[in-house]
Length: 304
Image (cartoon, rainbow, N blue to C red; front, side, top):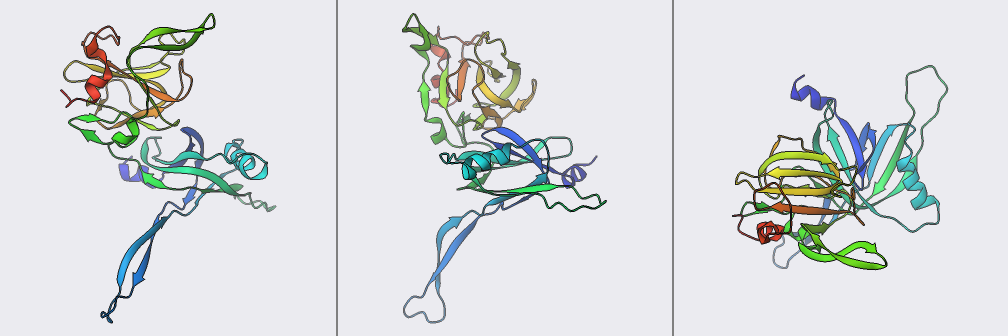
């Protein structure tokens, strides 16, 4: 099958906070419009000056066949029909080809469902399917199909820009353990840096290299949950732990800034974040026994 034919028969999925909800047949509202206002200046009777105003993002309208998956309707019910606090979520509309490969992704932010339309039910012997529609209000949309910000060959580990990597909740070295022993927190070694971010935030390869390990630490031997290791050309390695989704495979070559997964809370954690480890000693171990293994030495250097 050619690439063109695969794209002609595309499929949509929708992810809410990084969790896939359903496949969709129709999606409307992937657009943005900036208001333009005109000013008539004195002395220029033949023209007006145009200026940029606010940008407006229409609601997303999603249509799919009726299935047993009621997650989107339940979100609408909890948000609009029940007396609960408005819960905004981030999400993505994901375009896939017929083989299930991701082609393009549109992220939307601070969203909530505002309308649900059930199926039109008509008794006949035709082949029409029962479909439902849901309308989602949001406060911004962006295309997420390119590299994150890269400086001196080093990319931001989370999000799209280096500003997204400023939320460091735990640094490399000794720290208070979040595990309480006999009523007291104990000091323990932390062999990486923790970057807090919402569930589903993109994780990037901080440096170009080859994916050397893809693991799901289900037994919590390391406490990493879903994690990968990337080995770089100079023999050093980086580790990316607690992911909700891994989108690369072992042996794949990745560029600095390329998306490799999404932030999650798998493994031994208290909330969603990225644990970034660095093997600067080139011995295959991610420890805090050597200063060289502090990821900050890699992230905040010139890439050498």
